[in-house]
Image 1 (tube, rainbow, N blue to C red):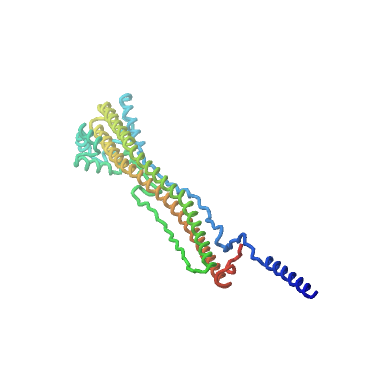
Image 2 (cartoon, rainbow, N blue to C red; image 1 turned 90 degrees about the vertical axis):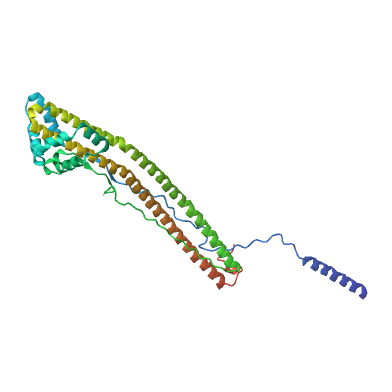
Length: 356
């Protein structure tokens, strides 16, 4: 009886052991959730938006040729002489004023020196024989004749007569990025997050800078094209001025000749000198003005490009400043993250701000 009971108990123990061994069998792990470090200040980084700035405008005072109203009154008076037989006061006054600058005898010689050949050469080249040029300059400088001569306004760019220097300053903002080297898991993760954030900022910086640089390049091309067109238009404009001046001379001399018998030889010669001197001054002034006005095309282009460059540089400087500030913030966040890693143990989950 005892033998049977012992066998039964042994069998029961065996079954329990088998069950225990079965229950303790190692189960296969189906999956392991990967560990991810997160670091405050190293995620979702952005740069403030910087839109292209409109360049400052360029102010221009155009060149101008200004005819004398007093001389116009003299021409009008001369035209009336043949009809009325009378010499108007404006014509008499003009002859008197010319006599203050040159004697009637010398006026006769100067008037004779303005031959058709001399006038043609003056019209085509802007020059006079040396001795005649000296005589004309002396008469033209006399205060008594200033009201009868044409005047000229030189062009200005940004309040300065053409020829002043216009420049721009380049702005370069260097950006330094420090790199730490640590080899524990938490620190490596912080450095990786930092590098990724900086790469994001680099891309944002490039994205913002590209349209600003493109705008400047496009503006520069357009401005230079405008300057070329501007300069090519000047000869026709000033040829027209010279043609009008020559026409006025020819009409004036013709009117004088028609009224010579009434004016008398002396007055005729004095007034002839007035017309020749006025024409000489007109040609010289027009030629000078054409050169200045042509240079204005380049001066305006230079000023516009300088303004466009200043706007570009200011925008790029702002982008660089924003970038530098953002990188400095990332560096601070990385240092804080690495300090947290070391304060809580080298590597492992304890080094993360908030494991996920």
